[in-house]
Amino acid sequence: MDLVQRLAAPDTANAALRLPGVTAPDRLGEGSLIPQQLRLWLTTVAAHAQALVLLWAAGVTALSLRAAAGIWWIGRAARHGSTDSAWQERLSQLAARAGIRRAVLLRVTTSLASPVTAGWWRPVVLVPAALLARMPPDLLEALLAHELAHVRRHDYLINLLQNAIETLLFFHPAVWWISCRIRRERELIADHIAASKLGEPRRLALALSELERLQFSTPHLAIAANGGDLMVRIKQLVQPEVRSTGWKAVVPALILAAAGIGVLANASATADAGPGAVPKDSSAHMLFDQCSKPA
Image 1 (spheres, rainbow, N blue to C red):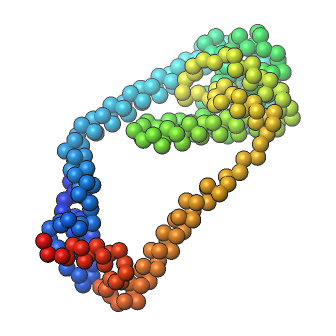
Image 2 (cartoon, rainbow, N blue to C red):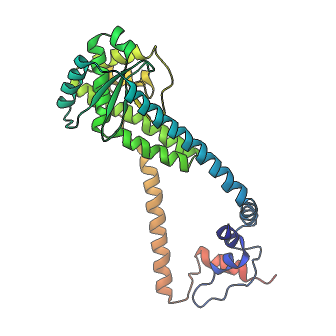
Image 3 (cartoon, rainbow, N blue to C red):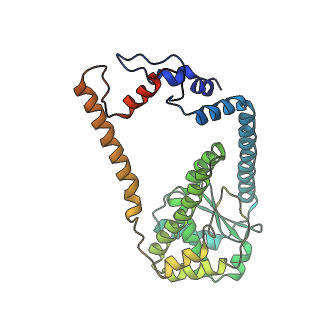
């Protein structure tokens, strides 16, 4: 709160104009470095800072409770799930082929409709009992290969860190947009790894098409096989497209480079003019001239 009030104070704005050898005005005039609207906005934020902090704390608390409930649910399902020796052996073979040296446990549960990966140090793959009874074994094996790709990439741990960032910065829409994009890309990467290990991308696509009919809600902290856009994932497996970043990714870099060159050129001109001098054509000089005019 003190920081916002200092930014809104006139003396803080005028201090930015006090260059070496130049005397800045004592009061914040009409030509100040901080516009009038920004000054009013900062003052309003400072006046309601306590309420804003309370709202932020309430949002963080609610999302933290949601995350804790998800972790508890996953742990409970892993502890109370039954075992299947045949599929456990099959999962261990797939893990060895994927280069996973840690032991990956398989638990059968009745509260899910899609395989889910949980845990980082001791990973567990939760498999719905309905899939064991109704899905063809080769298609279920493809889904297990997808889950093992998450285990290999430590996606569960990364997802926990991602949820922590979402909890702290829940008020920013860009955080949710980026997080959603990361989850989609994570599923596509896991599909690619699983398809390369199986050698049959079509088999994984068929398994995902079966899951499309079983849309349901899963804990946000779990890594489920039905995550992301299933149709996009199926299309990427059947007809893979090479996605290029294009010219749009170059534009921000060019803008930053141009800004950096401008700053260096301005600094060089200031150094050539001597200590304490401001180039006549610089924006700082024009701002100073404005603030130096008598009221």
